[in-house]
Amino acid sequence: MAPTLPANTGPQSVPAGEGAGPWNGTLVRSRIFDALSLLLPAGEAFFVATLERWRTEASPDGVLAAEIDRFIREEHAHARAHARYNAALIDSVPAASAIAARATQVTRDLDSFGMPMKLALVAAFEHLTALLSREIVEHRRLIADNDSRQSRTWHWHAHEELGHCRVAADAAAHAGVGRGLLALALVVATGYLAFDVARYAAALCRCDAARGTSRRKLFGQACGFAAGSLPSLARMACGWWRGMAMPARPR
Image (tube, rainbow, N blue to C red):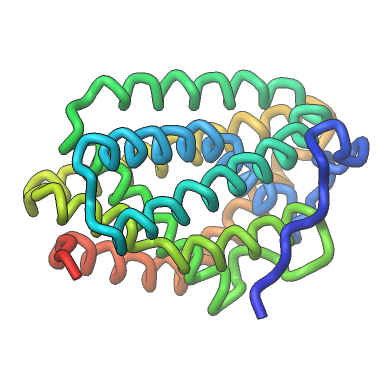
């Protein structure tokens, strides 16, 4: 059975200090996923806006239209959940608010592209999210399976992503987005996520170091996480190449 979302009514309901500790085994491992969470609300708003606009312009058939409706509902729910998660993190690490603001600016820049590229980017980001979600659900090496709000949010989010991960690709196929543009978008999306998650996780770790955590300890944790994640990275790399080789096809 899929995990349920931790109950909350809004950011103000998050317990004080919840974003402070290493909820994911080690501090570095936690900060990597904290950094990704800071990117998600702005990214999900971009996904929703893109598919809403395309649906209005293209009027897809009933099946695809219904899937887009479901996608939009679930992405709104993900954005709300990560806003609560991020509120707790920002309460503990105020510098995290600047990271979330930079993520919002980047998605505004992405919105300047034409509709074919935006659809390709949404499909690419959803493909990457699906690869990570499958690792979280099937292998559980990246996210600790515990009762923390963060862990429960990630497991719930991953299950939902796997349920709608093809919707954006189907929309791109319906719109006639070509193989070359899909491949370019996947490269762009991969570079964006890898670079920003790495630099924002490093920024959060610098905040931890400024508050007294040993830099040597953080470096050791980073090395340990990198080594332990190699099987997951290998599986995701195979999935990434399949995404390059097999662009979206209409059902």
